[in-house]
Amino acid sequence: MQPLANVTPFKRAGSIQVQNVGQVFRTSGAEVIALSDVSLDIKPGRFVVLVGPSGCGKSTLLMMLAGLRQQTSGTILINGTPIPAPDPNRVGVVFQEASLFPWLTAEENVEFPLALRGVAKAERRAKAEAMLELVGLEGFGKRHPHELSGGMKQRVSIARGLVQDPPVLLMDEPFAALDEQTRMTMGDELLRIWAATGKTVVFVTHSLTEAVYLADEVAVMSARPGRIVDLLQVQLPRPRTYEMLSGDAFGSLRDRIWRHIRKSA
Amino acid sequence: MPGRLTTILARIAITVAIFAAWELLSRTGLVNPRLLPSASDTLATLADLLQRSAVRNDLAVTASEVLSAFAVAVPFGCLIGYLIAENRYFADVMKPLLFFAFSIPKSIFLPMFILVFGVGFAEKVGFGFFSTIFIVIMSTTTAVEQVKVDYLTVARSYGATPVQTAFRVYLPSMLPVLLEALRIAMIFNLTGVILAEMYASRDGIGHQIATWGENFQMKQLLAGVVMIAVIAMTFNELIRWVETRCSHWRT
Image 1: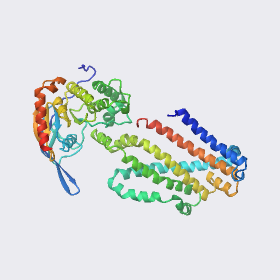
Image 2: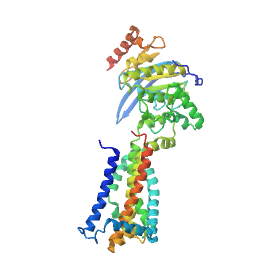
Image 3: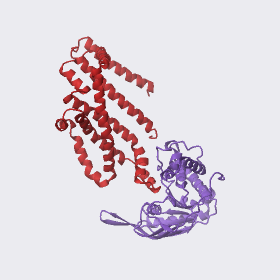
Image 4: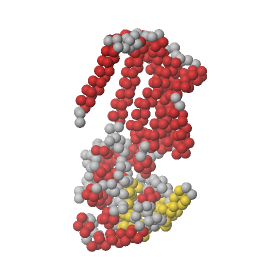
């Protein structure tokens, strides 16, 4: 792990309260209950992973935490207040692959949220450079996304998510499109960045191994209507290592999640 | 796999061959030289025509009409296209209607333009505008629709206003498609204006070409054809050059 000399101290991590949240979609007369009575209390600085079968509404829940979508019932509080619209000062979002703007360079992509706020060019550039250094992409700022590998692109996405120093970072299957080796490396990288910044992270994935490897807590969701059927505390020590993957503790946690998912699939 | 140089050489060879065939057909008398003056004669006439102030004046008139029509039709068409594509309901209502309108040959409306505007600048610009606007609207609509939803979600999650989204996401994302649309729009525009000039006009290069044709001045007529072809191709290549510079990120 590298020390982070050039990075300014980060804002305090944020808390997330999800209280009895439901989501109903109306599609041509029919009502689909996507989420039902979901509650989740996330303490500042925790790394929480949402897993569940596809279509269980885990991404929907994440979009609601980001303010991109509104719940039909219940309350969501980020740092104690509701989130009726996206608020980059409270929440940063890292999307699935290919969410970088291909016409901008890596550093311009990272600067994008700041440019929207009208932050001066020099300040923007300095922050973008610090973020690219944080994610291990020093010297790659002038490249365009098509000149970067899949893993590097997601590093840029993480840098973009962190550039406004939000207390909460939401990640929607960020490594799903990467190959296995890159995915493992990116997991380690993410944990390093998380340790350095101390953010609260909510991470959506459908890889059980990734879930247990990364998380403090794993929230397991059931198939539609999505609800949280189990909340596992992952007590494995940090830093996590590759060797833990083959340990008994790791295996039994993964089995427990798998049994839930198999039941609802 | 033939190299880039070979490809270019092949193109030059074809072009030279066409001119050579033209020259030969005329010189040998295989085609009546009065109907098809030789390539060298035509080019000499072209050089001569370009010296004349009357012809230069006609070119300037046509250029001003073409550029005026283009300058109005493109922003206007882009705006309408954007508004149509932005609003789902509006798009559903308008798109088939636009397709219907687009399928009608624009030339049949020319007499109406002459009746409404009279013969002159406004009529020709108006008809140029009319010939161009539909293709601009349709291309813009397509360009807007191919903007990835992911990009819009990213912009929204970072709190972009609608204006910021338009200029920082839609526009750069659409630019390659728009430039291509611009190129095609210019072809329609040029066709419209020149047709209007040929049909009823007192000046402009289209009017000249029509006159030469009526007077059986084949050399001048062919020189005029070459002139307009070169101008059109130059503009086309210019936009294509900008296009490749703006869409280097497209892979």
